[in-house]
Figure 1: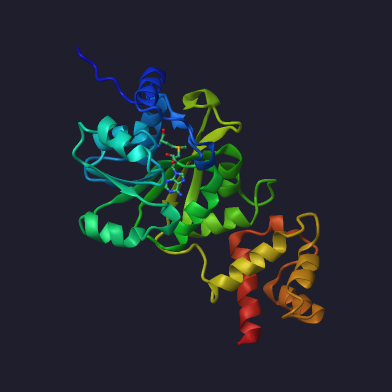
Figure 2: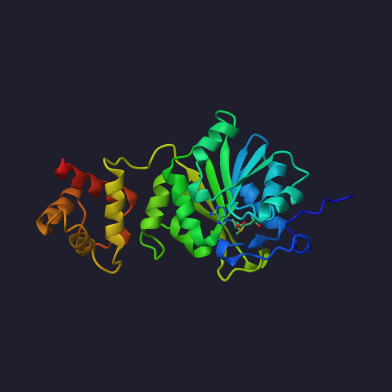
Amino acid sequence: MNRKKYIATPSMTNQIMKEHHLTFKKSLGQNFLIDVNILENIIKHAGIDKETAVIEIGPGIGALTEQLAIHAEQVVAYEIDQRLLPILNHTLQDYTNIHVIHQDILKADVSQMIKERFRPNQPVQLVANLPYYITTPILMKLLQEKLPLSSITVMIQKEVADRMAAAPNSKAYGSLSLAVQYYTEAEVVMTVPKSVFMPQPNVDSSILKLTLRENPPIEVADEDFLFSLIRASFVQRRKTLRNNLNRFLKDKYDKEDISSILAAAGIDGSRRGESLNMQEFATLANEFTAIDG
Ligand code: SAM
């Protein structure tokens, strides 16, 4: 059988780089995937089929894009590096279901693109091997914009994936875990060795799957205040909740207010922020909002 040579192999990647006189840009987080098995794992965990529209961030020379095009109905990929556009035209020439947009994902109107390019009610998934220098801003932008995505499956630094999926009372749990889990159910599906990238990154990686919630897991009167409260509770992790709140909400609330709000929420102020779950933060935030109100 004449098996097609995929982009995601060390020899094809080297050949493409050489042919196009391309060098890796470290500043853009360019670590390309060179292992088809890993890509198949990403696609399997994402749960993509021929009905699915996929958004990819950072196609590079097309290693993941190619596999997505094989499994999905269509793929729209955002790439910031102008040098890669003619290369992608060449490496992905056999596929008619890929559209590459030359844009910084942080500046892109993804919601508008979805309306223009995808069928109404089509399942949309985001899949990417993200540039590690901006993992968190990218994911928070996508979540806060409340895009109609069913899931997000991404390769990111292991340490960040662990923080996003962490449960209370663990070292990795913090404001990032709560921010991500407010919008999604987060699961680290696989850890990945450095050897599947070219060049190899300095840090370990994981595949993180975020399944978007239809509604937040808790009811909260003021979302922005909830997140400021959460951030305040983790500023000094070793300090008690009461100490952090007294210090970081002092412009708005005095110590007596904070003590009585903690009591009304049924939360012991001598606990640490890391021991509170999302429901407890919501109860506390709602007590603060109620006295403002
Ligand atoms: N998907 C390819 C792969 O797996 O081999 C490349 C992944 S590489 C880790 C990250 C890609 O994101 C690079 O192609 C880089 O140029 C691109 N990139 C970096 N910052 C970006 C941004 N702000 N918007 C869009 N793409 C970006």
